[in-house]
Length: 431
Image 1 (cartoon, helix red, strand yellow):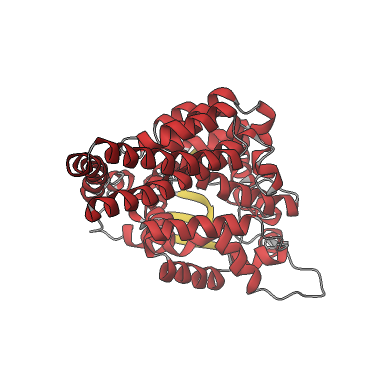
Image 2 (cartoon, one colour):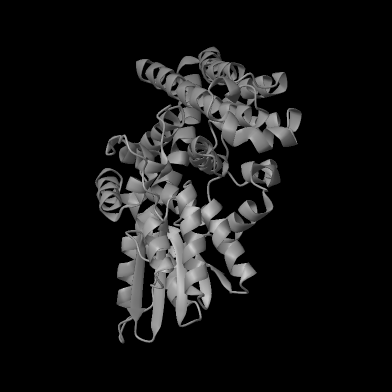
């Protein structure tokens, strides 16, 4: 979300010679006049006996931090709802982001690619925040801080980010995943400067509506998971929060969806959303499982049949070709990543074997070996979001080098499987 949204907002914004008005000018003026806070990014809902004030923010905007503080202090609500889940809140509050990761456990669970996508998103937001002198998510922490100072209960209303990413991965076709990964990677190295003026435009609902609609046209499954489902989830959790007067601090892109859902839930005959269904991670399609086992059986069966038809020497030649076709590009991938020598050797010997098993890939095996022999330092964990914005530093940071190893070995193994498989099947048909 961060990359395409910020880029599109910047493209839609034209520079001005005068100083941009901060987003909380209207709010400050209203408070000074003794009126309720108001503004384009504040939605005030009266739902029966309850009043809910939605505050839309940009997660790397200093003016959003000021506005959140002003609204909560002026409203003195019964509870403050925040667009965070428990894990993200702890990471932000305790400043434990990447350094708290158990990489071996993540690799064992085959979640390294999901982590890589999360890193790219975080690194992009970090770069934007660095331009504006503010950490991403500061306004969410400020909401929690002001609530705690006023002894106001806090409700963390967002869905677990790991569930969101895994649902997005399951529901997004493979070619769309590649498009998304490439877009995120390209935006990470984009040197376009984003100003507070751009972010103020980004917070305006008409611009965000256009951006969300565009995302829906390009990536309907991705928008469904990242935007629509979270709109429903956030609205349901906000609606379930105790109190007659609530303030909810959410990303501005969710304002329209949350407002619509809250109005619907206020109806007497409204049914509450099934949050368990929104937290369910769809299983892998059985078609992929069949393909995963069928391809190794075809390769092994073809080599065996070549042995029957053409003799053991021919079978041995084809088996050796499979080993070299898989091992060489995989080890070259590890070498390009400047992986540990043990990882490079593992790539050569593991790829021919793992390519015949759908249970684990050479990329995960090599990533695990790389973690074992060249674990990242605490300093590298802390600087990973900054280092990810520089192509050169991907090879200098050991954590990023693990990601490089994972991606490049995976590409090498895939290429080797295609080349080796085509050669074996060609020899089978010619025999």
